[in-house]
Length: 483
Image 1: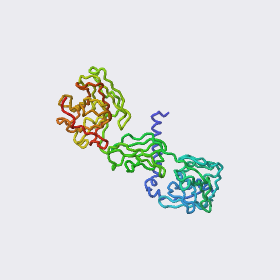
Image 2: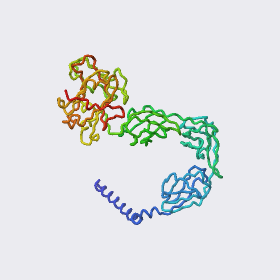
Image 3: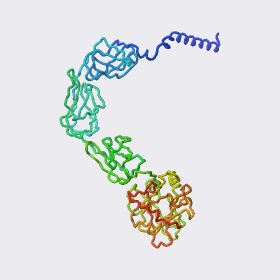
Image 4: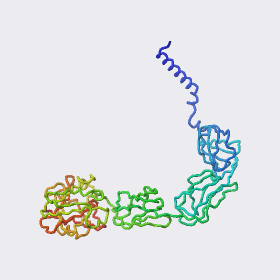
């Protein structure tokens, strides 16, 4: 009796011997044949099935080396190879314009094989049993029922073809093309032994072209940020221009289109023109665009009022909220910050540190060499409702040497929204970095007699120039150096 170890040895010896026999028998084939020789093998055609086939149906070819077939013909008509099953089986589709004849295949190496059998090509006549609708909207799918529908090669709506989405003997689905000329004739086409034949589906079909619906327009565009328009029937859009410059689509689907504003468009209010169909347009006028380096730090559509910290021990009556009693700033959003201060102590009532309170971690580096073309300009919308708060800006620390303030008539916007700009480079000469702190502080001042003192604030950003195109007011030199 053999042990388990002995049986294992016998098994391994048997496998080894079998492998030696296999490799010794096939050694010449494996080593001697090159890839070129294998590909240049002579194909043969043994049979075709069926012997009679309708146009646009499949025919199976059997033989040898058929997997190397590169082209297929019925007579002189090229046909599509639809499947290379293996070396002995090949499937082709009978072309719509094919005539009866022998089947020929040609390999990538130029080797040919011709069938001894002749394929009898037939041309069935399609018959439509359904009533074609009187109208449909662009991109709608229309179902056609009948017999021999697989022989239909195309369907036209006026001078445009619809896309055949599905086709078999008893059913066909075609989508309506974007043809603005309406009503149109609708015809189907199929091939006969004498050539292409057409049949009518409708003599007066109305194509309904919907207007693309854009859910929301951008409130602001900038050079380095992609613009996305979202809506319905967006695939009907043929082009978009901004400021008269045609954009290149980054993506385009039935529900959205995205693009970047062309570099030739300048900073300012620019019209977005959406073209669809052949001559229809939708225009969104005066959308603000910034062609320059741009960073947004506080925009109250994204932040709550809590980014400002109020010292309630100094002013227990102070209140802050999103939105107050004035309209929104001209752009970019639908929420702004509202602060009401009620004491006259002159103490700091509310403050914000931009490098701590925002999610954008680039602010500490705005003064670094090369950033914003060495001309970092902070902007913010402000409306003081004809009151006169004090704005103190601290850079690089919180001592008196690190601050400048704007107060009195210089900060009083008179009840209107104004876009203030502050040039940060050299704003405080001894400070070359904001990394150790940048603060907005608002308080009332000791000389105020009318309460509440009000601050409405929005859109704290930095660009590489003063946005005079949007009416920005450069108030840098109106700040004094006093605390």
